[in-house]
Image (cartoon, rainbow, N blue to C red; front, side, top):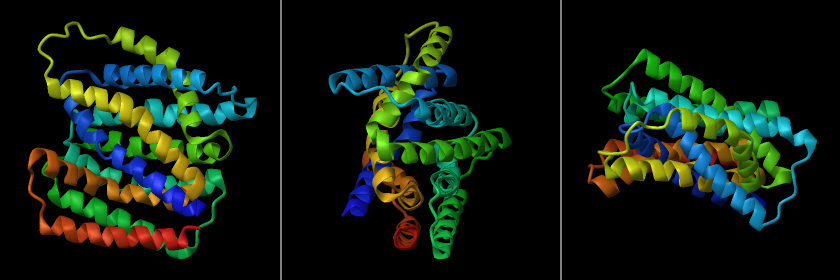
Length: 286
C-alpha cells in the first residue's frame, strides 16, 4: 500500500514537471536565464515560508543542513539555471533527449546516497527506457548545439543528485518540508541575484512568457516537488524515479492537447514500450 501511494504521488509530480521545459522555453524569450532562475526560486521561497509558518514546522536537525544544501544546489539553483541557459541554444524538443537520462541519473545517485540496492534486471529496464526516450527524441529533433548539450548534461547530473538526496531526506523530514527548507536556504542568494538581473523594461512582454514564468515559479519549483519527494520517500528513489521516463511523452501529449500538434503513431508505440520499461523497473526496483 505504501509503495502504491509512493508511485501515485510520484506520477502526479511527473505530470506537473512535464510542463516545465516548454514553460521555461516560453519564459526565456522575455527573461534572462539568470533572472528567471533566481526570480522563480524567490517566489517559490515566499510561498514555502508561508506554508512552514501556517503549519508551524520545526527547524530541521543540524545533521540535515548539508543534505538540504545539496537539494538547494541541485534542484533550486543548478537544474533550473543550466536548463534555462541550455534552452537558449537548443529547442525544448531536443532537451527531451537528456530528460530521458534523468531517471538513470537519479537511480545511480539513489543507490550511492540512499543505499538502495535494486536487482540487476532493474538496470536493464532503466537503461532500455532511457535509450528509447533519448532515441525517439533524437529522431524528432532538428536542432543541436554542443554548448546546449553540455549544459543539459550537467543539469541532468546535478538534478539526479538533488532528487536522490531529497528523496532520502523526505523519509523523516517530509516531502514538502524538504523543498520548502531548501528554497529558504537558497532564498537570500536567489533574491539578491534577481535584484541584480532585474529586467530594464517590463513592456512588450508577451502573455505566453508571463504564463511560462508563473508556471515554473509555482508548479515546477514548489507544487511538483511536494508530490515528487513524497513519492520518492514512500516508493523508493531508485524505483519511483523511473516514472520520469514518461515525462517527455506527457509533455508532447500536452503540446498536442493545448497547441493542436499531431500525435504520431511512432510516439504512441514508443510510449507503450517505455511504459513496459517503467513497469519492469517497478517490479525489480525494490
